[in-house]
Amino acid sequence: MDQKDTEMNEKGVTSSTSGVVVQVREKKGPLRSAIPYMPFPVAVLCLFLNTFVPGLGTFVSAFTVLCGARTDLPDRHMCCVFWLNIAAAFIQILTAIVMVGWIMSIFWGMDMVILASMCHSVLFIST
Image (cartoon, rainbow, N blue to C red; front, top):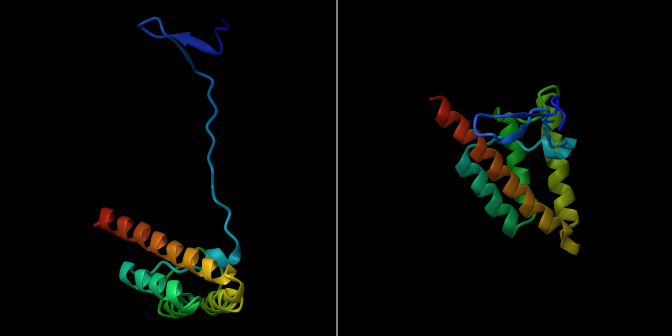
């Protein structure tokens, strides 16, 4: 065995010392990055609205950006992020006829709840 790649510990078990650390980071598009971090009850309400009226919850979430909700697009102006959310809502409404928009709307609402729970847990831990 190569001394460089493995070494023995106290119990005589061979362990590898030359490991590779891989970091995986999700690449988000501009529409997905424009989803605001909302309070948890508002995110659940938007999910409920998106489930029964595709695009309505996304439309409501666009206005939370104007109220100061942060997004994953810090370098863009608030109005630009607002219009990205409005565009996502219209895409969901227009494609709901062929079920694609309805499914997209539900997943969008689920992402809102996931982001809200992540933001809520960070706030809870830091206080």
